[in-house]
Image (cartoon, rainbow, N blue to C red; front, side, top):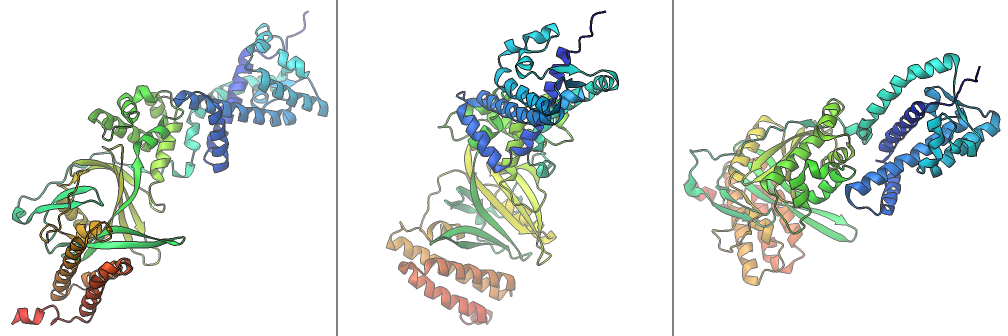
Length: 529
């Protein structure tokens, strides 16, 4: 009777290696977020001459192949075979310390020669591969109970291989369930029919890069020019932003300009490692490659929104559906999700949707923060422009009270509804054309001539005088406080500029009168007689 052939079958060998490779994939995606590992991967990527998603895929496969080999090497030193070879019922004929070292050598030789499939041809005839013979550590299939258990484990290995397709979800696991996606589009805000349009006029803003049409000089919403002063080494950095005070509800909001978004770079993140990107988003991919193009077409914008939705909605709960619809390459979607979440502040679960503000669509993230020291809550929106390839990210923040919510809604309707974004804003120095937005644009502009600076100083004093008079006459204590803060910050950022010395002195006088409630200074006593 001929001896039983105990060489592992081709099916068992392929299944075991696929299991080891899948485990290597899990480890790779779990470690790739670590900065040092990422640097190593980028170094490997630089060695791959092919550009685009093909080169990214090759670099990823090489990285996983190397990592798989390292894992197989150490498990072979311990078990004589890799973990999944052991699981499907394989062992090695070599024993003792020498046998373990030979098993490790088998993996090392395999790393060098496996790409040359000619060394594996004997396996087709149920014989040991040339790699095994070179290492003298031949593989064999177990018999008896271990052999039966190996056969029974094969369905589990197949399931594991399938689940490894979801390995990219292990990247930054802490945030994978962190976004509550509500992608029902918010309708464009409309102006109330009862609004008095005779008081409306255009308000340009170079800083915020839009022109809006409305009644911003009324008594309800008062725009407060603000400046954030920070030290960066020996340099002082001054960053303007807008305070919004609702005199009806006495609530306060802020509008700030944050960093810029570059959808070309973000789309590149999503594209990496996804060979289906160009076929899934052809218009977006084509337009983002046109470097001179500043605005996206309607079709490209639709695909961009689809890409964002697919990235943000990706979670353990819908990963199977995602793979069925968009393919098994999840890494780009997870990386884009991570990049978008990186634009937000930590500490509050974000909700996302899209919203039209004037003639531009924004991706909006909403967060509710709780101040630990004051037990107060803050509502914050991060607004990311979608229709432009690059654009400024806006931060819109209010208190998290019912009154503040009403203020936030009403201000957006009056301020953003008619906004025209990206249009050149022409500044006029006529007193009737200047506004609080003009102060943010022009107050620190060193290119102005003496006449223009004089007009700005005169307007700034007159504007703050009228708002201070209104606040004192109506006993608006919160507004009084914020007017003082605003004037103080303007004083601080202009005191080093000698040409604003007159404005500084006038502000000192105005602040003192407002602080002590000098009604005679504001002609309030005379107005009541």
